[in-house]
Image (cartoon, rainbow, N blue to C red; front, side, top):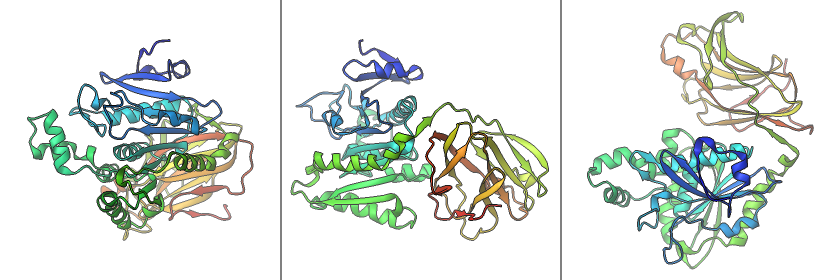
Length: 436
């Protein structure tokens, strides 16, 4: 089979199983994106590798750095090439692409589609890279919630002068101000993270003998996460020492040991089947009064909220659905973007199983993704996600404050019995010990 060009909208499992030389070319928005994919039939994990600076004396794009490493891992591996470098003399492109087409965004969507076809959960996905590849891995993990970025001597930002000159060389008609306004997010992990209100899980490998990495990347990153107490729990630091500075990367053997140890933590999933049938298709949610009478029905588009005309005390909105698999786990990813330290006891969201309250959270305290796992479910169990106003609110802004984004609803099939009924990542969620 030749390396024919496949449209992004038409990728199939058959395409991934019948690659020539493990290569695939995916066309999206009139651009060809090149990847190498190595499948491991017994694995439900994925490692995505991004390139650092390209050495044209060794190879010209498309380039797939570390492709020989794929045998080190019991995981599906995908190697990412950046088309920004094609037909140029650029050594790094940071996934910039074109002014009207952000290539890294398209790369993210393609990787997510591949993972979806292979039925790989987001939390079983690692983005790995060093230097500029570390930058791309951080950005890709931010675009792909619940994944992990493992990065070695990465960049978190590109210096303003450097990225302005980079864009100017491609598009000389743009002013400096326009470049900063339009494209700065593409060159800054911090800006992307803040704009998307999401911070990924990170394993940061740093060479403490690299003065430039320590001063320009490590120290600013540490200061950044220290400004928000909740961010530090997402980051693990691994320090090592190499006299080769920025180029003194973590050895292949150590990287293999590290990534395999992360994969091993997910090994329990080999007893679990990922259910990707999308059986729980919800079309609407209900708004009820304090006596549970239905006030209205609202179309469901991956979020629930309380409409402003119903913001009276104890009114609530709820989404109901049933567990469809024979037995197993339900994974929910929930996000309230409302954070107001003085706004406690005004809005809360909760989860009920078969009409029994199992957990609750004040919506004002945590504006990051809360990954919830509900265990020991059986077919027919009824799940309810509820948002409630605890006091009457007169301002229409409280409708926005009440929004709960439901980013993921996913079933995992297993017959294993777990000791816990529920786990979650929010430090502010409260478990109801004796549901009634």
